[in-house]
Image 1 (cartoon, rainbow, N blue to C red):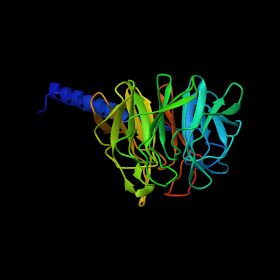
Image 2: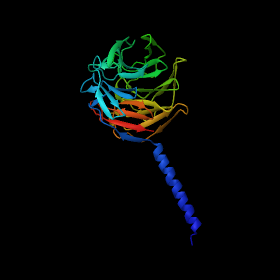
Image 3: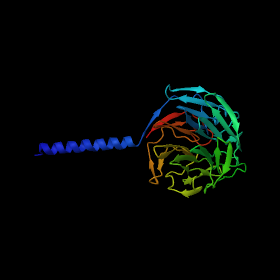
Image 4: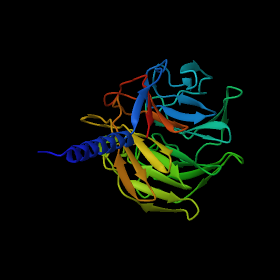
Length: 313
């Protein structure tokens, strides 16, 4: 006969196992859906500033389009258009302003332009151009300086350019080039270092990369770190809680729904709950403890979406 104590022990073990299983599922993160963008686009830039999220440029209705999302009201509104239509640009926030850097005009004409947006005045102004014109680059902010890395130049070939912009002096300086020139990469900043992740060779998403390279601006030096588990390009990245989260991408066989994060302290990657909507050419922006993943093409090449999905690790 099975004793009462034995049955109680089994029930306790089952409860503990269920709790561990639920905790493990929760640790994979969750996705929620918010109000879709008014427009459908791809190859956008996205950035958070002042509690609002801005989706800028891209392919779709208009390459000069700027839409602002207010998470508090779950509502969108149109803001002042970019001075010129752009896609595949980089965008960052620094000193209370948004900077849109490089990108392509027309179809694939790499530009060196820098446009500064003041959300309080809803106005744009043009700043000093980058030394190297390029599209499909990545950008990040360390301290009060902006770093622009990689991309495709006017010769339609990859550049390893690593150039730093000082908004206070409106000046650019060149620094140690990225070891692996590439485009359609993403970048994140953790503890004063920039991580350039993924990308492709000379614009071909049949030549996706898993490369992960770390730049230390104090030493002006790069080093190779653990590669991303899934080679991909056309991705977006955002840094949160000491990790860099990488979303989406494309290849000839389709788009990616992977959510993977890199932790520099451990030099390790891990996988999270996949995106609800696989896509490339998307944008990502952190607000609080959440990452908003916006826009992007659901199929490789010229496709568009108005997706607004939120990831909570």
